[in-house]
Length: 437
Ligand SMILES: C[S@@+](CC[C@H](N)C(=O)[O-])C[C@H]1O[C@@H](n2cnc3c(N)ncnc32)[C@H](O)[C@@H]1O
Image (cartoon, rainbow, N blue to C red; front, top):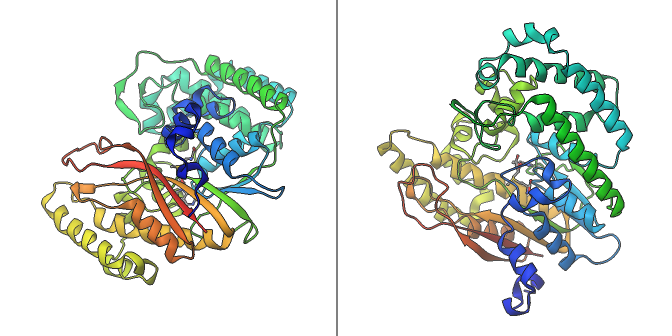
């Protein structure tokens, strides 16, 4: 198996390249990069690393990259900067809009400035939205002062008018308002984490000032991308990676650069509750299952519990045959261990459903990819309730069972701090799963 990036001895990789590889799993470095820095997505990975992988593998004029778990669009923007064709799938409706809005950077700056001015004018007259504030969902009332919420509602209303009029900058306005929501909340809202209404922050931005600063950042970064001649045709589809009925041509992909949800109970739906509630897409936590979770990989116990996953049917599914004996043992152990835990979390069905979903994803990717394609998955393993799940190896085996030729895992770092309850000391890791064929 020839793996240009990883088969080389470390000594002949440049220092920059090694640093980028080591930091591939983190979004933090993107906060200094034009366009990537617009929205801080803590589930994201490094854009410079994605560019590096694309540079290593690109060949021929029809070379095409796919990110089936596109998130905030890191791979797609890295491909545009590299001048390479790219597609992405993202099935979380809110996250897909973020990626799509970032990909709208090529529009005219004058359109963005004009639309932003409309929003600013509206935000200076928040009094008209006092009634909206009094009828606001409780979570929003706990996160914002009345005046901040009225200003934000005025902005929302201005955005809706732009959208309804088909204004070319509407998506970017939506993104700018979305980006300032956490900055303007007095409640604890760690970046892109769940909301903590009982904690308060010392630094709270004014909606209007934060919005204007965001628009200035957009305009500056758009100028950079234009000046550097970035390609501008990447697309992110609202599509479920598990679904083999794809919006792209079969056998068209040369390289997959991606990071799927990890089987670590991170709830992508709850992480967007504040934003989706502000935009009126959900009215409460109870809506998240139908609005978000049903569209995404089952990687948290709330999801598999709500789905009423049948363990024996799932583990016994023919798509999991390659790992069936092992996953059966792990899920049975989890089913047993949970009974002794207060939360009785449904990790046993979460693990089974996660791998069934990923098996379906590999089947779809097999038909999307050309023969001889390369895929790189940034992934981490997990140990719910201290029961070890060899995620990278099982994913590799499922990829091979679905027609890929081989896999290899390159560990980048140890991690065992993610689990809040840290009741176990099982060593965990994160790295790159390279799949060939
Ligand atoms: C680890 S994040 C990827 C982040 C991305 N690399 C970035 O830098 O922004 C995984 C993403 O997969 C999305 N996702 C989950 N299930 C999916 C599915 N079935 N199809 C497509 N996307 C999905 C999640 O919403 C999440 O945004």
